[in-house]
Image: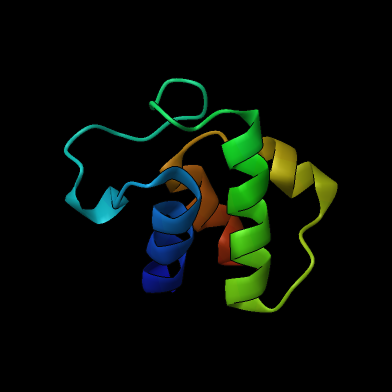
Length: 74
């Protein structure tokens, strides 16, 4: 599951969270702005072949939170 999430982050934000020492957080990580957030959502929906709930999209505030949310769709 985390491999799919890592790929979505890499494609949307241009970073590999598995290799980053700093925790990734929305609007605190360079490149993770509102446009990149929507690209991340689209990438996750593609990777997991699902349609994310709007509440889940809004709750995606960190890498760890994304992992937690995507567990529901795996």
